[in-house]
Amino acid sequence: MKPTFLRKLLVLLLCVGTVTTTAHAGAVDDSVEVPLPPEQVMAWLADAPRAIHLSPDVITADLHHKDAAGCSIVDVSTAGLTSPFRYQTRRCALANGYIERLTQSEHFISNTATWTVEATPTGSRISFQIDAKPTMYVPEWMVEQATLGSIRGALARLRQALLAGKP
Image (tube, rainbow, N blue to C red; front, side):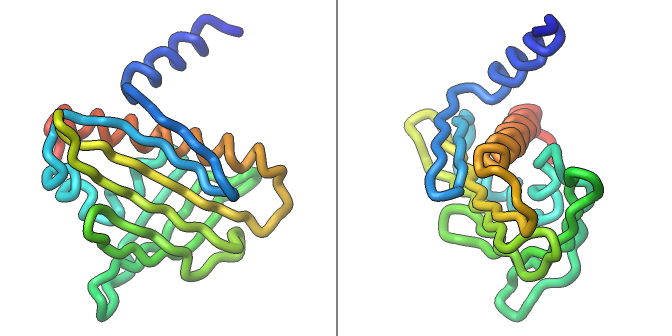
């Protein structure tokens, strides 16, 4: 392995902090703790395009409109194998987070992402889960590894933004 790869890996692990990763039935999740109250984390995640842009694979995330229930309909473009994957997602608030569900796509059969924010004695635990099923055949382990990379990247970026006080 190249030393630069090892340095990048070490930096990523240090940025993410304590991480718990699981994969089950196609879903992959990860979590990180921050020394901030859940309300502050939820406020940061409230902006749908900004939160979706946390993933290092996202090229664009544009608010299409808000529906009658107050959910955000967002047009998303992500890095694909040979060209960008495009899809539309419906992002709704939960009591302790947000859920994004696929509404239309030529590239995914299903794609659900869930942010969960829980209070801890020292701040908040932020969990991010993605269950993505592409329309093209891709070995499950590859989907899980790519998804885990996106989740870890998103959590690292969110943690960095929260700790830096970025709006």
